[in-house]
Image (cartoon, rainbow, N blue to C red; front, side, top):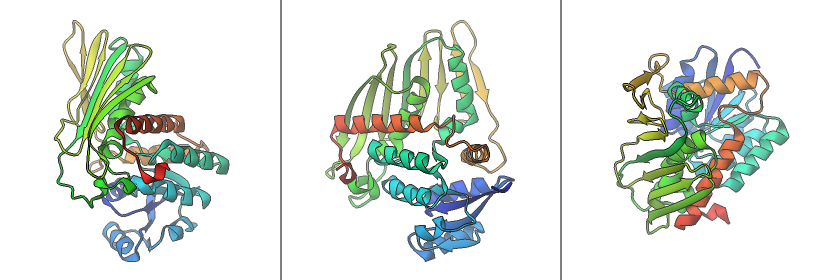
Length: 331
């Protein structure tokens, strides 16, 4: 690989635009191609972002010899197909979250990447956020004692018509995979895979979850109280409660710019981290980690390990089982 990592962006939605802008702000990365299901959509995206090549099919993008890594930014219902196509073409892959629709699809992707000797990572930007990384360091160093409870939520109220992708089981609709993946992943980051899972939800007439609550339990005695919604405005906050203090992420816990450490007998301490280069959203940390690992010849990132992504998918599967949500892809 050259000193500059050359990216191909697969899909042209809002998250693809944000990622592209962040990558273009890095000194050693370049977005060289974009693909959509139509050439017109790809060309419009390329023109907006100054990208040289635009393709009207995914196959053309993964066949481009100038592309080192493919960023999969499709809806999660297409993650398995898109990432598989890229891996089979010999490309390293960064795939948006939720990683896939279910754990079976996730296992297939991981097995394919390992078989081909290619890098694969879920685009869980929360794990790479400098503030979250500092939080996990403090927790693991015992700053708040033993974790007893993790609380996290992510929700907003939207007027989604029955035909919207968030209401379509075939597209992995519902709150859980779009939003709930964040609180679930946050709990996994701190406590690992849970030993017990309970959940309840309000379902739409189409059979997807509109509002979901989860209670996860660990043999250590720790619990996680998590929720997600597309019918209610949540604070999108998180709290980590330990035997000797707590940590509050008062807003946007999935990409925070600060948290408050509250230890018994001490004044609250606000811990911040700079946002990075001006104008970047935080997705640049994903691109930096992918580039580091690929250059080092590592098949996966120790910060977003594939076994962790598989564990999160198992938990999401279990939650869907508890609340009665099934997708056609589960068959």
